[in-house]
Image (cartoon, rainbow, N blue to C red; front, top):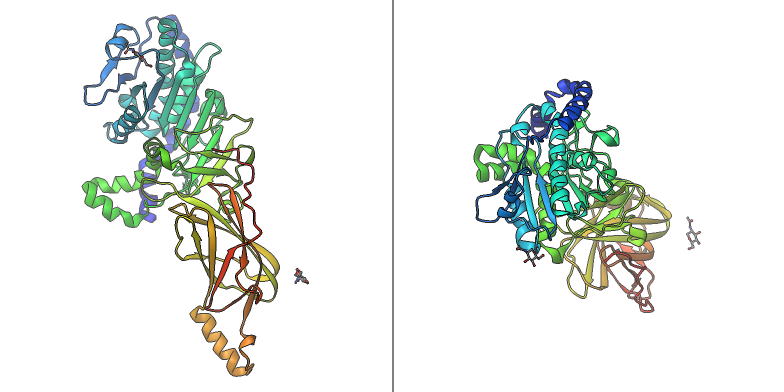
Amino acid sequence: MSVVKLLCCLLFMYHVSDGRKIKENKAVDREQREVLKVKAPYISSSVFRMFAEGEDHCTLDPLQLHTLTSCGFNSSNPIIIITHGWSFDGVMESWVPRLATTLKRNLMDINVVITDWLSLAHAHYPTAAQSTRTVGKDIAHLLQSLQAHYQYPVRKVHLIGYSLGAHIAGFAGSYLEGSEKIGRITGLDPAGPLFEGMSPTDRLSPDDAEFVDAIHTFTQKHLGLSVGIKQAVAHYDFYPNGGEFQPGCELHSIYDHISQYGLLGFEQTVKCAHERSVHLFIDSVLNRDQQSVAYSCRDKRAFDKGVCLDCRRNRCNTLGYGIKKVRQGTSKRLYLNTRSQMPYKLYHYQFRIQFVNQILAIEPSLTISLTGTKEESGDVPIIVTGSISGNKTHTFLITLDRDLGELMLLKLTWERSALWRNMWNQVQNIIPWGGRERKPLLTVGKINVKAGESQERTPFCAMTNDGQHIEVSQDKLFVRCKDHKRKRSQRTHN
Ligand SMILES: *[C@@H]1O[C@H](CO)[C@@H](O)[C@H](O)[C@H]1NC(C)=O
Ligand SMILES: *[C@@H]1O[C@H](CO)[C@@H](O)[C@H](O)[C@H]1NC(C)=O
């Protein structure tokens, strides 16, 4: 981790001390805006290219509107404008054509436009960050030309911005004149440094479009700063795997990356978690049958306890392109776990178990295995934090890469840990209890499993009448309770 830390510092933070300039320059920026208003024609610093697969991308000139038509712009169709972020080497990153191709191939009748602001993005980070307003203004100007000459409704516009590009999209929304708002802005791991904690007018915010969503994938803090913004900036803010770091991006993956990309692999490792936001979005377009669902939760800790798998009153939503565009007053933070590769979807289950009358406080290592009508889970270790005592109900989050179907059977195993075995042998030597029945037992009360994706809750009962006891290193089987009628908590999510 220390190498990642070092690189992050190198890549993003070593100029941050210059960042104060941004604030000072705001006044200048305002002056410039006034000047630009007076001086026609508008000069755009950014280049806009219509994306067409397998062809040279056609450059749009908002001043010469015939270029729009000749580039294949169809004013009856929605526009998606993709905007990149800070550039380390001045070269368009490979995710840009990948995202554009995915959108073009999978969505019918769509105009895909790429914002090229590399000339401004290839600069020290604070300088590039400062240019986000300029580029936002360029986009707003392009949209206003479309409005004026094609009566194009801007609610058919979807801006997708990555890193600094997310704030650019926000500024485009705020510079747009008139009462109509941009339809949707998606921020893909919006940049953190120089934007975190700023007022909503100085970063991407829910006011910038009719609907704003954001995917936060690299908010791990180094020296008090994170590459991606940590705070909520949208109507729905998604934090996959807690949002700090992503599976498959660990340092040990660096060897894979180096074998794949050569020395560039080092940079790939650093970009991995940041860019994961893009690939999660691409996944949502490519794998429409495997949409990832995320759940509203206070924080990652609560989510990891499995207490947040609730879909009532829009508490859950779909990550990516197919999001349900329900607006509400405040930002919602949504959590989900994902796989390390595409398709990223994981199925979330809440396992709820009550232990009864536990007199001795113990910390058992439990393994659970679920069998459903479609699949089996295999053995899943349950990590009990804190000891089990009294009559307490514990909840756990279990994530699986497949849907089990309707749950039928549950197997619970109390693993005999080496440590426990030793202790037990010692105890037996000291106190000769004799009878088998004196072996340590866990008595189980109610067991429930709730599937997040189907919102179905299944109670489990012991198969035999010998009570619900679990002994060390014995499998205990539970079945779906007989009198259980299939009950679905009301599902607002589809
Ligand atoms: C524009 O797209 C619509 C479909 O949304 C299509 O019917 C129409 O033919 C297209 N126009 C041109 C000029 O390609
Ligand atoms: C646990 O609950 C049972 C009834 O379900 C009760 O008899 C018992 O006293 C409770 N034990 C503790 C430690 O609260």
